Every structure is written in C-alpha cells, then in structure tokens.
Image (tube, rainbow over all chains, first blue to last red; front, side, top):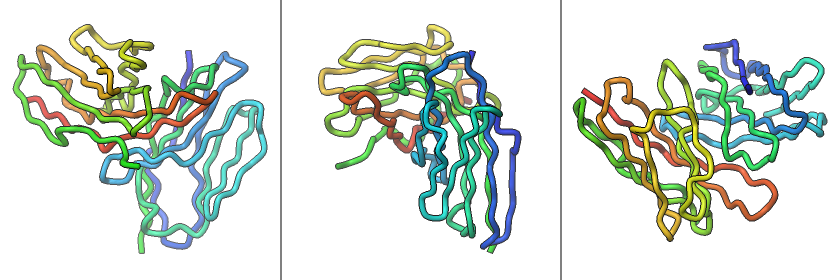
Length: 116
Length: 114
C-alpha cells in the first residue's frame, strides 16, 4: 500500500528565513509520481510540482526547490527567503504507477506559518 | 479558462439527512475526482469519474455515491449523514488527453453535520 508521511505538523519561521518541509513516501511500485500542493486558508489545493520516479534531478522554481532522493524515499521541499504569503498548509502526495494521478495518496500536511 | 467550481460552498445538515454536492470541471476536462478532507483522516480519495463512468473508488461506505453528466459536471451524494461526514469535500478535474496531467482542485464544499 502507498503511504506518505509528513512528520512536521507545524512549522513557524520568521520572514526571510529558509524552511524545508519533509516528505517520506512508501510504495511498492517502481513507477510512481510525487507531488506537492499548497492549501491556503481559502481551501483550494494549488499544484506546485510533479516529479516521476525516474527523474531524480532536483528542481528549482524561483524561491522554491525540491530534493528528490529515491535512496531515502524522500521528496523534500525548500522555500528560500520565506514570505508571509507562503503561510499555508503544504501537502505531499503520491500517485499510482500509471501516472494518471487519478488517485492521489496525500500526506497529513505541514502547516507553515511565516511571521513578519 | 475558468477554474473548477463547486456548489454550494457551505452546507449545514443534520444527522440522517442526505446531501448533494456539485462540481463543474474546467472546460474540456473529462475526469473528475472527489476527495474528503477532515482533521482526523486528512485528505482521502473518494472516487473518480470519466465519461460518465466511475473509474476508480476509494475506501468509503456505500452511503457515498456520485455520478457524472454528459457535460462532465459531477455530483456526489451522501445519504444518511453522520456527524463524521463533516468535512471539506474537494473536487478536482483533469484533462486526461495526454499521458499525464495534473489535477486542478476547486475551492471545496464545507459540509457541517449537526
């Protein structure tokens, strides 16, 4: 069975600090997809990134970066120079092997609070 | 393009009643999935519809059902409501024409069961 663990329930940082959100996953599939979503107070899940199991290259998008390590089954998310607008709940998710993401298995989420 | 829309946004019901939630996907998207979000269980997959057929189903009791119309709009129904059904219900749509496409989520319907 697939499982995603986000051990950090809540993180609080001061603006401009860097912060890393951890994600550890379990799957027996050799082909799988990992995601990060952001959920602001409005409730809507906002897609941030998708990574497939064959691509371990790290990715950077502006202040966001992701570190995927198959050896440790981790897919961590770093926000550099955090801003108050980054405050939200962040979810890591895993999808089944056909890549269709028809069924996402989510972690329990990490509540990030960025203080001014 | 307009995003995924869900109606109503908020709903209050009492135990034993039934409820119907609606989801309109992004134009052109034929796949619609539903998720339940609760503080205790987190985000859980309910079911997915594609071309009016249920293609995938999560581990929920039969009180939870859904359907999809020819225009891809989807509804989910919960019968005989229980207090534990209080949750944010999220709908997501996908294009499904490529090998892989992300799910885009709507703002959700917050259901409170009293």
